[in-house]
Length: 193
Ligand SMILES: [Zn+2]
Image (cartoon, rainbow, N blue to C red; front, side, top):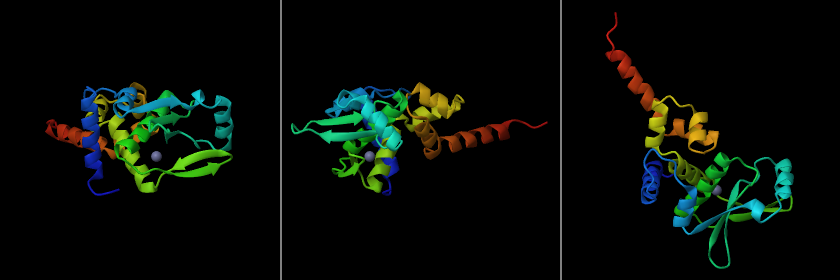
């Protein structure tokens, strides 16, 4: 990842969250973020029979989470897998919106079992993942939740993200280390008998 990208992503996420009137400790509304970016969110079940996704899931689990299309009108649509949980869907939608915020170039088209997919380059994928995490679980929010002793599962449930994302963010944001240090200092200050 580019040098300084992680810090910049946290800042970009804070800017967007602030613009949407989202407090530091609040979950962001992905719908409001999409609307702000002029993007429409559509569950793929609205476009293709859900059965097709069941077939696809059998073919390759996790083959399709969400993709962004540009319609002939120029309007962008984020289409997500209708079989995924709300937490996973929000994480995937946030990832797609992060690509748009970062103005990533259009992706290449790939075919798999008669289905068409768009793929990104690795660097852009990492950047979108990182920014998506900052949008859904910014550092301040994570710090507060972790200080309350909330587990990744509880944080994921509370803020409607995937557990993978909650776990990743707790580690990657440095919040757990920060809390560990704060606890160590507290323990030192306590007089020993
Ligand atoms: Zn992507």
